[in-house]
Length: 239
Image 1 (spheres, one colour):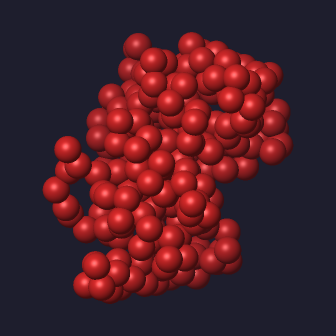
Image 2 (spheres, one colour):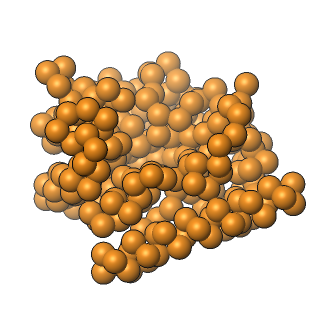
């Protein structure tokens, strides 16, 4: 465990250096960017070490892994983000531990989240997942809604009991006009965020950038970066 703590501490320090350098290059204060460590596929022991090292925000993408892990770590001062594609039959479980759902991309999911948040007496932060590779279907390869659908979905979230509209999220697309153009993709998301904040001024969160492209996200103006492998390394999957 000591070796793992040393490894995670070293990796965290390297990621912190990257974020700080990216902020400096962009003329931004380091405090403007929040690190979310993506702990998917990694054990609760790692989450506990990260908490001891000062991490306060973690993310998961599979309810079957996240729910028991959260239960083991319920005593820790952490904010939990759900970042995976979410099926409505998992909503009740996810609402039990997630503080923020970053992958909201359809009306039916909003309705389910609102119902379960009210039932649980919780307020759940919601990010609209934007698909910059959305085709004729209006959906992206990895979930998300086309930019044209943001306004209507935002209004629905904002008007739903138990939910709070926090902002936008995207994953750099692998296909379409933004494939291989992460900086341009994130700048497009920032433009969409500006549009959203005209109607919903409090929806200031912009979640973009991962281990490979966090610098591009910071340069574009992201408020949150989601980093997994650069902190935790490559390990065997759970289960």
